Amino acid sequence: MKMKRVAKHTTAATLAAALLVGGGYQTFAKGNDSKDFNNSYGISHITRDNMVKIPQQQNSDQFKVPAFDESTIKNIASAKGKNASGNTIDLDVWDSWPLQNADGTVATYHGYQIVFALAGDPKDSNDTSVYLFYKKAGDKSIDSWKNAGRVFKDSDKFVPNDPHLKNQTQEWSGSGTLTKDGKVRLFYTDYSGKQYGKQTLTTAQVNMSQPNDNTLKVDGVEDYKSIFDGDGKIYQTVQQFIDEGGYDTGDNHTLRDPHYIEDNGHKYLVFEANTGTEDGYQGEDSLYNRAYYGGNNPFFQSEKKKLLEGSNKEKASLANGALGIIELNDDYTLKKVMKPLITSNTVTDEIERANIFKKDGKWYLFTDSRGSKMTIDGIGQDDVYMLGYVSNTLTGKYKPLNDTGLVLHMDLDPNDKTFTYSHFAVPQTKGDNVVITSYMTNRGFYEDNHSTFAPSFLVNIDGSKTSVVKDRVLEQGQLTVDED
Image (cartoon, rainbow, N blue to C red; front, side):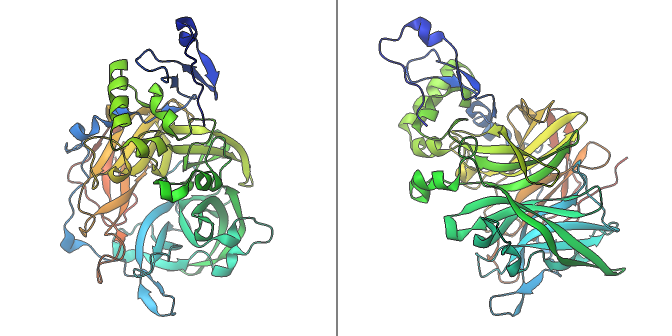
């Protein structure tokens, strides 16, 4: 997107005038460069001013992911599947998410807690499918998790008249909700390696049965359909990504991790995406937008100069991550495309695992990101973060928790068996603590140690402040705690 340029004869009065552009007010920033402008597009932003302060914060115990004893970590015993040859193998299990009620708390389905998780052959990085694990609600041990197998059969995707499902090659992360009529509804990401990494937000009803008191069974899916794959204006499409040069430019494309919520009787999906042409697109022009920097004008000018003259210039110009939102009809089809809740222009192209819930009248929005994808001095390749934001309303304005947005930090070598990622905040029915789940051990790194549910732990939320609760490491995969 080409921003409006200022002609050489433009007067100072004109420079000061506010222009309504893309739904947000644009003004030309006072500074040394006539290309400077200030346009929020009516959206909250993860600013550079926030992010540059994180390296000074992240070593505090308030934010540190607890250290785990490697010797106590177990594989998920029930995590077994078939490889391409049809042989039974132990699976890697990584990104996971619980079946939740509409308010985000963990649902109980016929006495069971259910977790959906990505799993696959440790020796085949393309083998990525959604599996369903379950355990009795009162059990906590990792050994109590049973495996109901894959949610989808390979043939399920051949849905008549659906334009996207037939091209699916992998199943990526999402969310699950227990509907008012007691049905299990799954949202996930249809990934197509046939279409340059195209990603489509997708849903299905998962039919379940209970053959006996100790077993849940997947009986197939129905109402299986695509929902959203971008509109180009608010959220980048894969074709725009291709037209911009695709992966060869160092760019990234995201439209994934649909997270279901309800508010005042309305249904929504919050998801990871990249901005489109009308809400702050990628490109060198974005480096001149003060709204992405925050702070005062001297900071803006100094930080902009570092970007324009430094090694991060191209990476920052391509960075246009977003946590987007769409409204759904009652039948879970697309009703309305809405502006992102927050974007990370110039900071990073990838803010993953959109996660949002309401607590004490405020909306809490979380996302995971990797330092290796960022353009911030002092943030390194091994840094892993959960960032968090709070708002009085669902659609914002979102302000950073802990002044910068930092909620969790982890910087282990990815080869470490206790390396964790995909941190996910699970709200509880009472108390001010949320349970943090994640996976441990990167897939395919070890013959005997597979990617598995990491030990859960607690984070306390107190208004706009959070802190890791000391000495409260839970069982691997634990979802709930009893709090007074």
